[in-house]
Image 1 (spheres, one colour):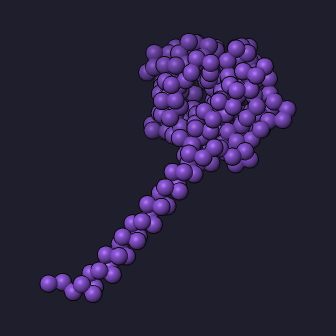
Image 2 (image 1 turned 90 degrees about the vertical axis):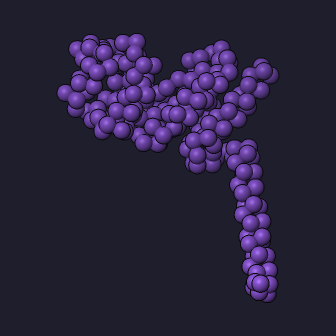
Length: 221
């Protein structure tokens, strides 16, 4: 027979430890479910930025194709987009901090101009982060484009076009105007900037919370 003078104290310690972990877990879940905090989870833009989508709540996604955090956010964004309400519109904005980011922004808008953005947006992320594609290597880019069924010459023409250059300049203005200092950053209806401080789920939950705030504000107008 086991010595109960040893077993019982040990059992009590296990039970108490389990209770402590359960309490910690409950506090963690409670913290995650709490309303987002201004100055920590999001920042109020003063003055607000103008929005292009007047009849819908506009959410901007500032990203860079070379950003690993942006890449890890993509599956969550794709899932979130499937549940997007009819009164909300997502607009992707390639953030620009230097010439390398500007070149990748031009790539994004060239995809858009060629009508292939939805087809290649995620595969281009995959190619950079999984296959080590160097987006500043013209030959490597052309090879990748051919594999996607995209004419490299038409792509280069799109990159150099006035329309794409104008959109790159606009993306630079938005990056500066929204005070973006890192990616990924999300913005809600020109009034709030949401930063990634913990999980991707928390970031998108904060966006959903602010969409609700905006929906109530607009209903009062």
